[in-house]
Amino acid sequence: MSESNETNFYQEYEVFSKKSVKSPIQHQFSLLAPNEEMALSMAVENFMRREDVLDVWVVKRSNIRSMTSEERLNLTKRLDNKDYRRTKGYGYLRKKWKEKEQGMLDEKEIMSWKEVKKK
Figure 1 (cartoon, one colour):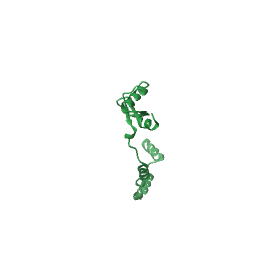
Figure 2: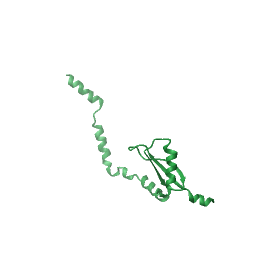
Figure 3: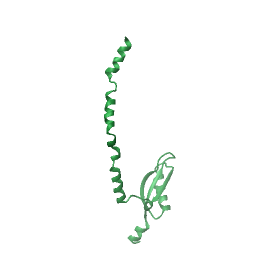
Figure 4: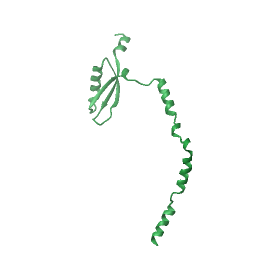
């Protein structure tokens, strides 16, 4: 079998498992197989005999959609824009908060109440 036929013959699969009904699905490993049935058989043989699992899934890697480099760049730009977290439009709140903090009770004041009750 030539090298180009061999590379076309095997496909990459990702193997996922779930240990119990309530547990999350977890990625376990990648493998090369000629088809889904063989990939599942290999995954079960190599994984289920080592660990107790409820279920095993195999997914052809080419069926998994990942972000393009352009999408990743745009997402990063969007996530780096945290202007909405700044309170520039609420500048008066800082002053109000300071007034509130200054009006809060301190330990000395609270202890003075105890002396009033004793009288």
